[in-house]
Amino acid sequence: MSRVFLIGATGGVGRQLRKRLVNAGHHVTGLHRQDSQADELVADGVTPVNGDLLNTSSERLAETMRGCDIVVFSAGAGGAGVDLTDGIDGRGARFATEAAMLAGISRFLLVSAFPEAGRGKTVSPTFEHYMRVKKQADVMLAATPLEWVILRPGTLVNEPGNGKVRMGLAIPYGTVPREDVAAVLHSLIEQPQVKRVIIELTSGEQAIGDAVGSMAAFSGQ
Image (cartoon, rainbow, N blue to C red; front, side, top):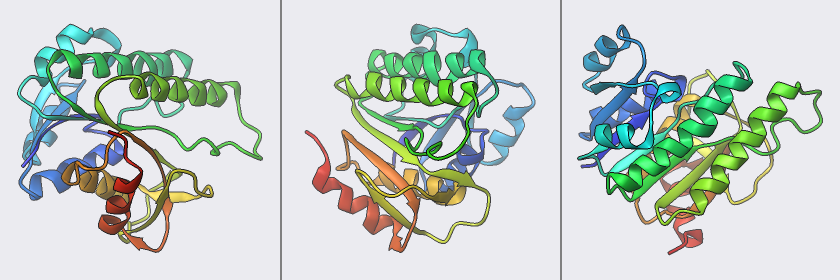
């Protein structure tokens, strides 16, 4: 079983993922910012660690990660403004990546953004900035020696997942339930042969375990 350090443990995808992992027997440490969030993490069997991506360093974050063997970064500002996007999706992702290397953790899963999300729409400068920062974080992680996976889900929706997805290096844009994104991350954790690959994800017709397994053919060494 894996020892997972989950950044974004109290977010929409993170809530789903932490429960799946604990139920499957993995040990999960969840980063949280507000004191009130610790109780809900403990209730789900997660070890809470208080920390703020907006006020940390790679070294401090590394200390909280030690003993884990995989980092999942599913935190995000969610369009809450340029400063938060820079602090969480930008510097936060960089701190987490550097911290993983300092802590001797080789595997890193990053939830990014589908590059076609704004195509054909009128988008705000804030959204454009968000997409730019997400891409910069992808580039930063892909340049490291870590066994990374960058997951780019389509637009996230709250409807129940059905365990069927479409995955690939480049696929048509679409939506995907947060529940299915969490299930894909769970499957990636349990299929470590999938590594050093950027995966686009939407709802589809293939069972999640099979879809994740098929990505091993595209994985780097």
